[in-house]
Amino acid sequence: MIAGRISYGAWYHRRSGRERNYGIEKGVQRVMGEPIGGDPSAIGSGLRKVRKRRWFLWGLLLVYVPAIWLSLHLTHSDRITAVVFGVWLVVLIIAVFFVSTARCPRCGNYFHVYGMTPLYLRRCLHCKLHISADKKKPLGR
Ligand SMILES: [Zn+2]
Image 1 (spheres, protein in one colour):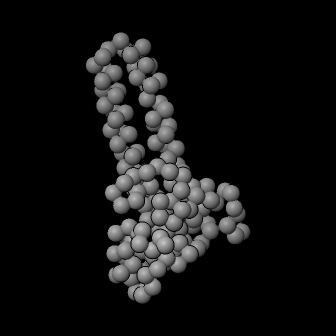
Image 2 (cartoon, protein in one colour):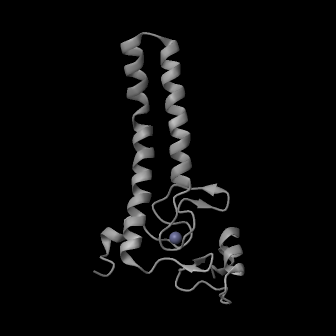
């Protein structure tokens, strides 16, 4: 059973919601009593948003070595390169924050955060919705 594996947040919302059913209903959970998911276009656009944030983070990680190299090559200054590194680090922290706070369009939980643990997997840590579920299976339409 995975009923005991609901995060605290989801448990809280579930308790406070008007719904009495505390079990997982087909992996779809409700947040603040509002039903989320079910609408294929909403899931598609939600997943696109999550993907965009992920790509930005991966791109940022990939650009690190070229950026530092370029900075050293062009400026020949450790000081300026340190500033470039600092800016990169700040942008990285912001990117990590945005990826972490991306919500799953189906269950409404944080896509990459389970409890206090961020895991950047390709599936929702709560309802197992795949990051490209809208591409693989045409959900309706
Ligand atoms: Zn989910």
